[in-house]
Image 1: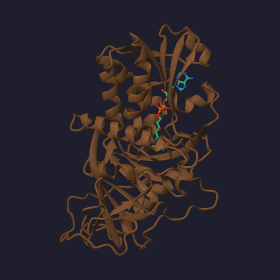
Image 2: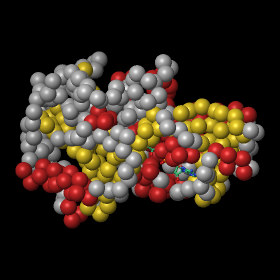
Image 3: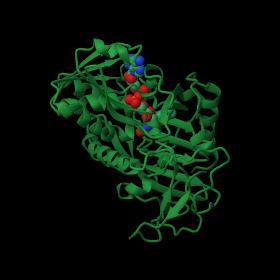
Image 4: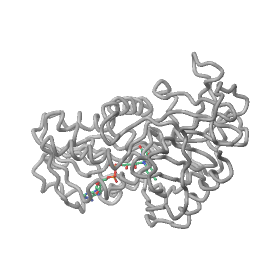
Length: 395
Ligand SMILES: Cc1cc2nc3c(=O)[nH]c(=O)nc-3n(C[C@H](O)[C@H](O)[C@H](O)COP(=O)(O)OP(=O)(O)OC[C@H]3O[C@@H](n4cnc5c(N)ncnc54)[C@H](O)[C@@H]3O)c2cc1C
């Protein structure tokens, strides 16, 4: 396990300590913590039916990682202003509203009546909606609509500093900019809570481990890059991780801890965004751009450029490195109202599927890999680990 740390939060009792966990989803160092009183097993927890026959899809996505952090700047090309808004690594959904708020501020500097947005992923859609809210008529030009865009294949967790930059390569002002983006996004997500279809919701997550671990960050493995960790800047936004007494849950792991995390049910959330955009008069044109020179044919003089990993080909931006990630999708079980992390396996129960991911290898997993073909065997293996948990460590 990486990035394990244990800090007492000011004002927190011994029984409510904070664990620094990778991407908001790592296991924690649980030894030596004082457990919460929790007399009875929580009967409301339902088991996951993790048969490989219940895998209804296996998807692969590429995180658009840039060592210096996302490209967020305006560039004049001929008579057009192009505002770049791409390269958000494993944090594109989490930072989308904050990053797009900054992009739209740059785009609206000259008060254009119309703007074009390139791309219909997390960053394109949020830029488009915020552009409308700022008073512009917005057209999205995109090769793919959201369901076909890479954003639709994300886990759906609030992970604002997941593979967002390298600590050594990010500019000096980036941590503060990141904090602004994270806080703006977090606040905006509040307005999607409690809606029909639960596009965004808070859910419990359980962290299970048998082995006591050290309460300090693990040293980086040889060859591992120094992925930036900024989450301590926004500790006030995240609930603590509470250590539960043995028997408090049906999980029979030696240590069980629980927190509550924000998650995105991306099918519902994506429809909500697209419907909101269209309802406000937004237009969508399916179009592929071969090079930035193609932008000259657009009637809009202000363009927000959100092609995600597509920027590597479109802008010949070799600073974008693909970080491959795969998800095995189990048939949804509405009664499973929690997420799980154990043995480097992460499980998120969403309304559109139970998402199962193998996170072994840490942040370097998939680094530099652009293979988007699903690996069925790997999907069956990770689902097999979930089945094993319920067969042998539950009840
Ligand atoms: C396995 C995995 C899990 C993840 N989980 C999370 C998570 O839980 N939380 C989180 O915050 N982030 C997560 N991410 C990261 C997140 O998915 C990305 O940061 C995010 O999708 C990037 O969004 P985007 O809009 O920049 O790019 P994209 O979703 O790739 O959208 C780009 C858009 O631009 C269009 N486009 C590209 N090139 C062209 C072109 N030449 N012409 C016209 N259109 C073009 C595409 O069609 C597409 O519509 C995860 C990533 C992976 C791989």
